[in-house]
Length: 343
Ligand code: ASP
Image 1 (cartoon, protein in one colour):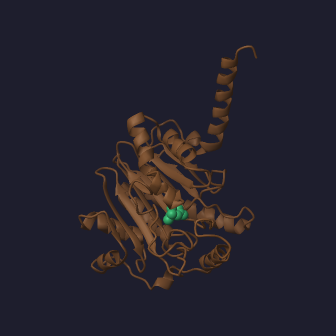
Image 2 (cartoon, protein in one colour):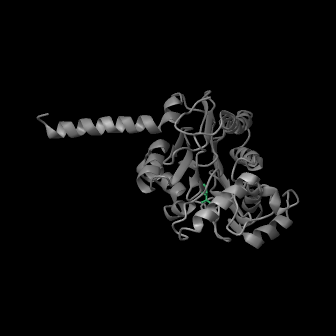
Image 3 (cartoon, rainbow, N blue to C red):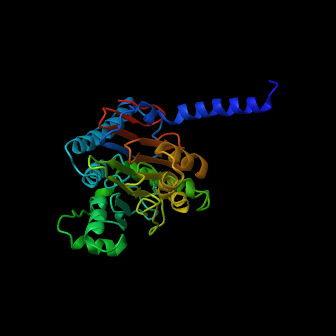
């Protein structure tokens, strides 16, 4: 071509189009009409093995569908964003397939330490717990911290002692959280560790859960719950209970829940960065999330789910897959594990 500038513009245009096609399926399918409510969920950015049995894949999809339907039904009937986020995450915490509540991964010393947080976009109220060991539904305790204390984050023994004072917080024996699959992951992790340094050991993180919502009253809410990473040191706290990293909600911008290598999400304040790009640079949810996941983080770090204050939904990841689902008041509904997304 005789005009290098024209060629460059054409290439950028074509590449941009290609990139958008690969990464924007949720908003592409969302109708133009502004939704009165919207919901997105994730259950971790570590996708399952593509060779898994069709039954196992369908079981995971069905668990996602059920969680989205529960949240959609609540929102449709006028539930608040916070109640919806709490209820949906509790269901995911109770499901042994996911790394939150029952099914949480093991620490290096064979225990479970759970983290969770929740945030109200209408007033920036937030609550979180880290390293809890006997709380059946950490998301519920995080909400109690938000509503019943003047603090944001309670950790370890302090969080357990606070739970002792809350009549409606269900307690369980620590082995309630254990599953055979997670025990096997710990064994694999130990074998790898024997031949690598602490830094080199591949992260085995999978299936943290999160939910973000726009309710009928125009308010946003976000929540995240996790067992963390397989083989984490005891006392390690990831991004999930860190407001601005794993969870963020602000009615002026968006609600975000993250999943991936927590240390990177903390380092880059991922959830807050997405909100800030929307607030200060005027980007929509999709653009802001794409930028942070693909340009700030490194490939394989993880993903995010975002609901904008306009009801737009972004489900973005730089891993092979992310368990995810979304719906809104216009009839948009879908779940996905890898690149596919649909009913
Ligand atoms: N972000 C979580 C953590 O680092 C792990 C995950 O998302 O699966 O604790």
